[in-house]
Image (cartoon, rainbow, N blue to C red; front, top):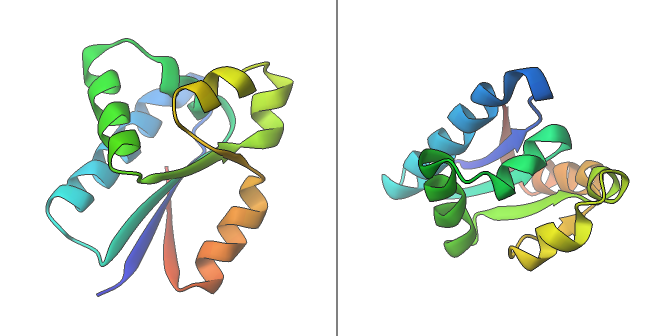
Length: 113
């Protein structure tokens, strides 16, 4: 079985695609489709951590509770003044390029949304 890394990089105008990626990550974990599932949030998709829409809130809560979100991009979060709020929600901030490389070097297959 392979390990999957969901790299959520959808732009502001296409956050529906990011939500779809988060749902695929959740379902992949629930149905054990991969050996392991991890998520990295980068760019505007990081705002979904605070989305109060029931569908989005449910999937974000699931991913946080099950420790599937490895991190959100520290650089974007700081520039957008979301860093403290993201950490308070239980998501670590790390440089996304470094995390992406670490996961790929550890055998994860990146899947981007």
